[in-house]
Length: 399
Ligand SMILES: *Cc1c(COP(=O)(O)O)cnc(C)c1O
Image (cartoon, helix red, strand yellow):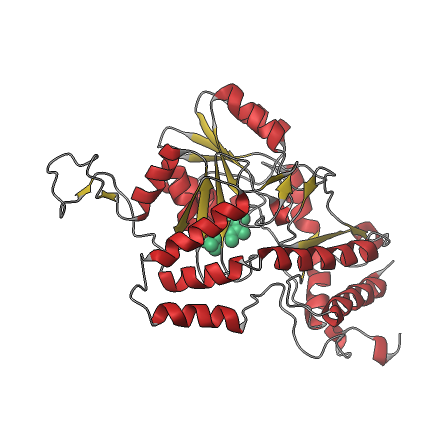
């Protein structure tokens, strides 16, 4: 192999001259103006823009209620609170996720129970869930991994049979569709995140959607210290100035500054998701022809919102492992990532007593996957660069 073609890892010329991140926000002048308008107005927090953003997400997802939070993690914590998770409860979730998913169970004193993934979709396996249900089980938290909806018919059937709450961690799945229904209106409660790498952003921020009035009341109270001003609910004094803290809540409120960005961004959800789908289709068409690359299965009845694009490599046909390929791609200036380290591999979870070997499918997939850049602001050229980089690295290491 001559020098021109050699890997950047070994001193050759990279496929790209500048580094391409795996994800980033798309902010335009309209978004900036919306934020500035709020800054010039009367309310910069807990004002009318919060409700406008909540309505936008409720309308988009087709759910009755939406409650904004300071982060997706805060929103998940609130959902676990509303679901009534306590110290004596077990909650079944996937290890193939960001730590926030299972941390939210720990915040309530509950015990996370990890169910293994389906080796084709990398989503939580309903069969694995079923085997873990016992009298302590209180809830199930599936993640719509990469934006690919989990198996809700099967999961809801188990939840109905055993009286469990289903909380969808849809941090990846704004704009995804499960059997004709929008994600956000499928589970008992659904969490969205507005971190900059997600579909739309508020800097930091999150939302819970639900059709259930009781959950809605609890979410609202939990978001603001557990304090109520609802005259009908006051226990000690019914005066217009009076308020009571009746439950232990937090300050998990979103600001109107953030909500202004959210309202403006939410007008573009469809455009952002369709750009992601278009790029994912291009990756799929290219990579499905490669004997070295496996792309996760997507069910006919669902439409992914393509938060992440993950490839899995066949290392039997390569002279390198994932970590070597990862470094080689990074040196080509392609912002690769790994989603995710199985949650219970983290030292904190190890200390809680979780051991390697718990979810063999998740552990196997973890060792083989690489996340490629995918976000709406990428250009066609960026997509071509990623493809060129992957092909270059794979052909170099091919046996
Ligand atoms: C981003 C993310 C979260 C947390 O959301 P934040 O808004 O960053 O707190 C939770 N779960 C998953 C799967 C995520 O990707």
